[in-house]
Length: 79
Image 1 (cartoon, rainbow, N blue to C red):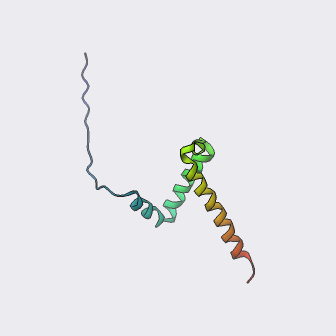
Image 2: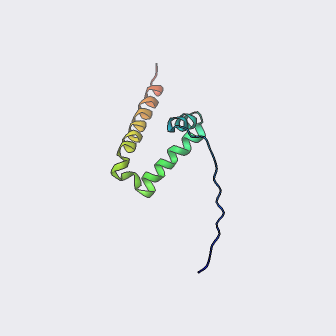
Image 3: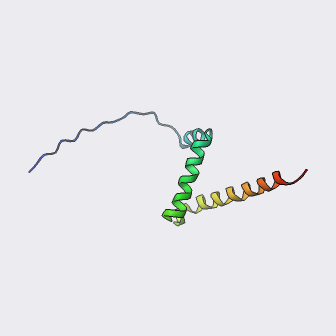
């Protein structure tokens, strides 16, 4: 029987709420864009977002598209 030694490193970090992560991402246009692009890749390329557990996420993405198009249309209208 061969023995294998494995070094393990445990990094102690502070626990934080998901809402803190969300707030941090939303302060950065770059981070927010990366998140949205990752979600779109999951949807378009992986097909994973079509699973039932991602239904609310897909609904939220759909609403984002609708709100953006509506806002763009309102800005383009002459005053």
